[in-house]
Length: 466
Image (cartoon, rainbow, N blue to C red; front, side, top):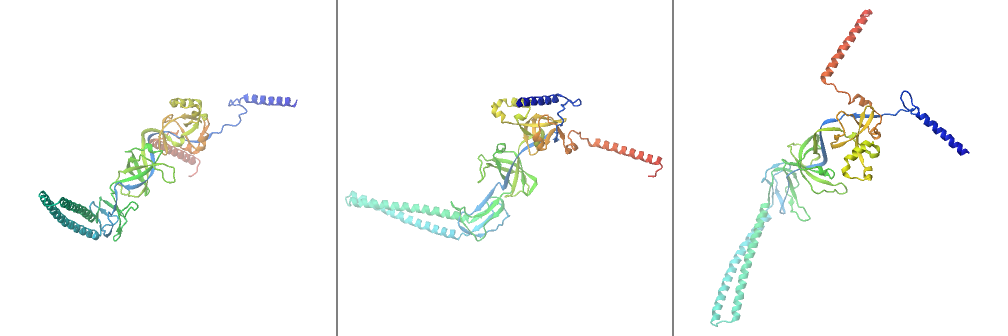
């Protein structure tokens, strides 16, 4: 019985609430139960702009000379003369340093003596070979008359072959000695080191009196100095794998030196590496990219750190809005007409229903009177501040750009109102020209004069001395 009465009471309460909900207020035509007004979201707005927009790829880099040579010694010796200093400008062929050549000179003299000795040995060997040939010929003549034995003939034949072999051996030894002497003369020339290119001595690592050594497999050898051609500079950058498909040879770039971030140096992309590298301890893959500096700016020097901006795309006449105005919404948060328009554009992709539900859709909210209106957009290139819109927005629209908490709560049909800052700088207000402002100022000045004159007349009529 109690359960029946409980159901009856609940039914009466539900019916009463439904009846009250159906009653409307005469002034607003809203339900009398809807006593709380919808709270409007405070928003900031902006007008779309038409102009140039450039997409940039940023990367860190290091400045270096296009042509830079490390000067090393090809022989082991001591530096006895070095007439240059760090920072000096040298021309190709100028003397950089002179090494001690006493050891090489001694080896050359020894080599020349060896050659003379071998030449004398060859003369002797030739004489022995001639005599052996003559004796063998005589033995053949005696054998025809049975005046000698076959054993003696064979002994003279062996002696003849032996003397000719000794002669050939001496000739080979002479050729070897001549090659050694040629190498020693080359080493003598290497004791005088001259500038291989025209440039500036960027770094001097050896001093007069030091012994320089040649490089081996495990030892790089002594680098005496580094010469850089400062007339042609380049920047070696490391472009992230996400951005590298956009970078191509010939694109314009701007190099911002750490020494002066306000004045960029003009550059151009020369080459992009075909294989990426991964620094030790990091998961980021970068591609080495070389930029040619096309400016003769004297501020840029080898070894400087720089930040590079590469222009990968540009639109001269584009409709743009602030990047913060573009938001991503799930399908369930958007009206059916927006979804239908989006699905029509995505029809050629052939996505499954599950994949469609997981999609986030780019939209922009427009302030239409006091309500938010959602628009499906087609974005183009973007920079750090603005994004190009190819479709969905007109120049006369008022785009909602923030704040973030309001953008996060925005839905189609949501009531919105301008913030105090936005009201003072409302984009819906038409900016007057300088001439119009001048006319307004003149009108205001005349109105003020009339007001002051009227006050003076009232003061005089009242008998009051101002």
